[in-house]
Amino acid sequence: MEPLYQQTHKQVHEIQSHMGRLETADKQSLHLVENEIQASIDQIFSRLERLEILSSKEPPNKRQNAKLRVDQLKYDVQHLQTALRNFQHRRYAREQQERQREELLSRSFTTNDSDTTIPMDESLQFNSSLQKIHHGMDDLIGGGHSILEGLRAQRLTLKGTQKKILDIANMLGLSNTVMRLIEKRAFQDKYLMI
Image 1 (cartoon, rainbow, N blue to C red):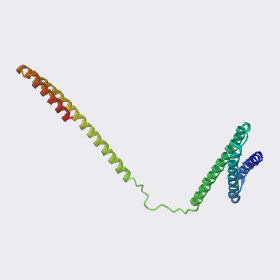
Image 2 (image 1 turned 30 degrees about the vertical axis):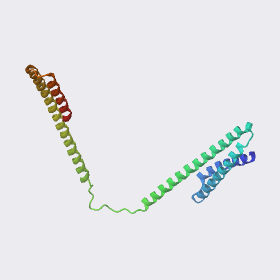
Image 3 (image 1 turned 180 degrees about the vertical axis):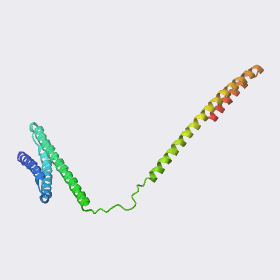
Image 4 (image 1 turned 90 degrees about the vertical axis):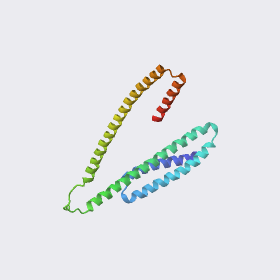
């Protein structure tokens, strides 16, 4: 296990030095360096799988230390992989900006046509429609409020009328059974109204 670990560790350090070359490489050799680094990273990942198997076969007193060393190598390689992807992403963004800049510089501009108006009619119509809807909603809310106030006033009037009818019925001497039927009916009517 130790020779394979040393080779892998050495290769990780070589990749780290190659990562420094990425910043200084010219455009023609940049892709070659990237591919070389990616191939080395892939090779290290396959070695790490082999090292994990070998570390699990180590004697119990050395196993934890061996696994820790392999995990540290794996972390370093993942860090290198992320750094490579970040560099590629930055390079791609930079190339895209250069392409867009070249397109802008190569585009031929002409003078404005005679029609230089700004199409704001649709926006104005949309805004006026929104204002009309807003006023309409205010009117609906106001109408609903007045209807609720009217219903509350009617309820108070009906409660007073009901109380007077019950008082008159008591004076006339209607039986308690008839009175309960009337109250039950009024209660059921209340649910029908709601």
